[in-house]
Length: 246
Picture (cartoon, helix red, strand yellow):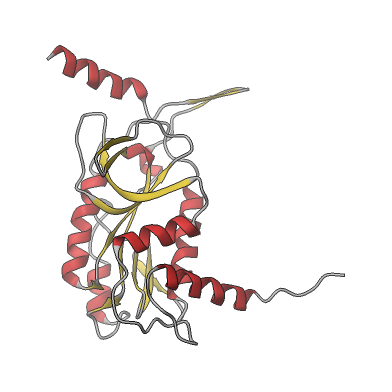
């Protein structure tokens, strides 16, 4: 005989755990009330704990086979199962752009200024050249995937917002700014709300559920992307050969 499982209570408990991971103490409504901001390290820890182990989460620079490099990304979600060529120098990690699923800026608040700053960071990754090759399997070879069909998600992570209403006109105008190269797919102010951009529309989180809502919507989008592009190792190898010959 089956027994009931209270999903609502389970999600509420999960959100409280996630809020604690961000260094924010929830009250009885799950709304964080403690002073302070969620830091870059807090966001990395929280997303690492929430997402399946196939995803790596950390601060990175993205690179491409032309030897170009993005600006430093606060929080990136990248493949750790199939992708080679991760480089480290001191505390800096360099990841091939083909391996990256999503990129986020972590700031104290959502505001137009920080949205514009995050868009610049996102564009520095999306502008890099992504390669793709076929994948061999038992029955033959899967053809190369089109990079345009594997968009890199982007967003802004914050504790609160400078806007009076995250669903108001000023916030909407800022969050709907941008094109395929620099648009934000997600924005969250843990104390005030969360939003996902779907096409040219904004979808907002239910009140007091913004953190678990954001995490679930992010995971859904990641799942829809499937696996990352199979990068062309020859393209990276040719760059090394060109450098050696020059």
